[in-house]
Image 1 (cartoon, helix red, strand yellow):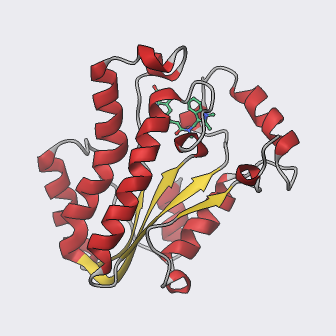
Image 2 (image 1 turned 60 degrees about the vertical axis):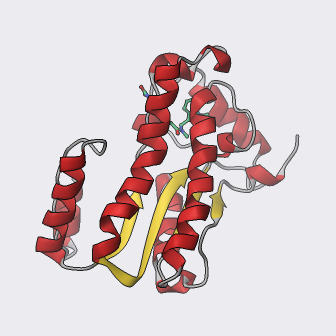
Image 3 (image 1 turned 90 degrees about the vertical axis):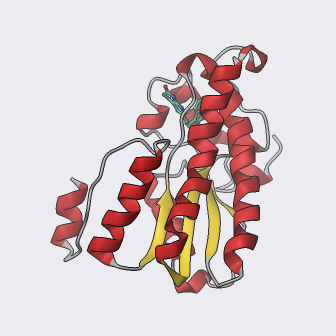
Length: 210
Ligand code: IMJ
């Protein structure tokens, strides 16, 4: 597991499970992080949720409540994390969040998540201006479809993966390691002049039309 992996590499870790929409929890994770690590250099925001009913059928059938929850969990949590952690971030800290091409073009069934990711990418640009004043950076990784837990059970995901593979210039789907490699770059000083951007790791899918 992740804890063993980190500790075997000589790293230290702190796992805290909780609800990011809870003010008290946000306060707690900042307090505990400060206590264990002091300043923080990198943050990976990997949080999204939409109700299962909203992720199929007609987009316009989304309820006000499902829309609100999708935006709250998938977008506001990024703003909340940046807001809460700013105080303990190092001067050249870097933040990465995860997005998907469904923010720009209609992908079947992505529905309200597409709208949430569009808002997330816009939030990255506004946050980049706020954070940039003191050298901190924030970017989004837009990865191609990957078979992970958050894609499990989505109807037609397997056929989406294989039809994607036919269209991708590089002819192969991406994996979580490709995604991690781009995040590692953006979080590193090698990306010191990149902020507010949405960078693709999708084998070139986004540049194609047919
Ligand atoms: C998710 C739904 C529909 C189509 C989709 C996806 N495609 C891809 C995803 C084409 C690639 C995966 N993705 C990029 C996501 O952002 C997934 C978010 C998500 C997944 C679930 C599944 C379980 C649930 N709620 C979810 N909320 C968000 O109940």
